[in-house]
Length: 212
Image (cartoon, rainbow, N blue to C red; front, top):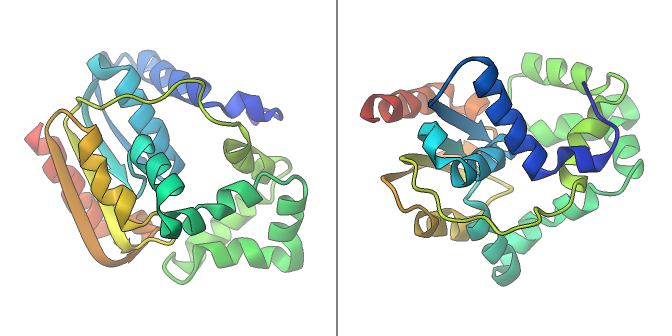
């Protein structure tokens, strides 16, 4: 299902979807893992439903409050985040990404994602409405309320070669976690950490699950 309206991708809807999936599976409490936008949803889910989570693991994405502050006060993070505003332009963004055999879309993944995986991602994003649905996450607007601290036992993994998230927001994330918190930094790993360093990510995740 790919709703057309950007409002359908608001954070409250995404968090409700995560909880609904857990409910459908019969999970009273569960471990939640997220990367990039999935990481943002994971932070919000933990903040709003602390009683439902056993643990939280987020890769790349800082706590949204830390990220928001960095975007306002740190020039480096503001520059890194500029694409989020640019991608709100529709259909210009879709047209640019899919032109010339989706050259721009392929470029976003860089050389750190296996070519076969990039081919699969591009194929799916070229399906009717798929890329617009993905970009609607950026077009949904800000959440209506501010996010609070997270008390769930949390592992946050940041990578030094992440083009989207700088060290200011990454290091400040600890200030928004009131429960057990573990920060891991992976050197020379790109934003696409699950594909670029799967063994390292898996090891850290298993350690987090064992610890909680």
